[in-house]
Amino acid sequence: MTKRNKIIYWIATLWLALGMASTGIVQLLKIKQEQDFTANLGYPDYFLTILGTWKLLGVIAILIPRSPLLKEWAYAGFFFAMSGAAFSHILSGTTKEIFPCLLLLALTITSWYFRPAERKLIPVNQ
Image (cartoon, rainbow, N blue to C red; front, top):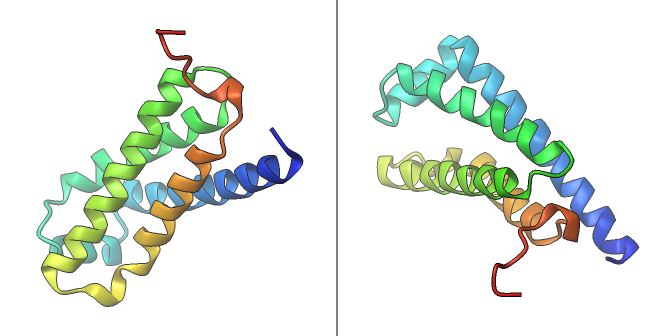
């Protein structure tokens, strides 16, 4: 892995972790603004607890060394959560609020793509 790729990976991963951790904490604390925001998208209040918990666990998974299978699941979860958030904004007509989830989606893809070999799954057929 080149030095440039490592720098890209760590910048994307740290920004992703910061974004997911901060939004996960806000969701777990059930800040009134976040509750209203989620309700406007049509989701129940308990969804904040589920999403916040999974985000924090995903952050831990992508930052700890080893555990490539766990990392794949965390990246998949982040991808599904952020793409789902983007579609929720589009379908609810709140497209002016779409940028944060698209940014976290782009960081998820970038971090996943540039991850080092020791953080990747080894294909079974090799």
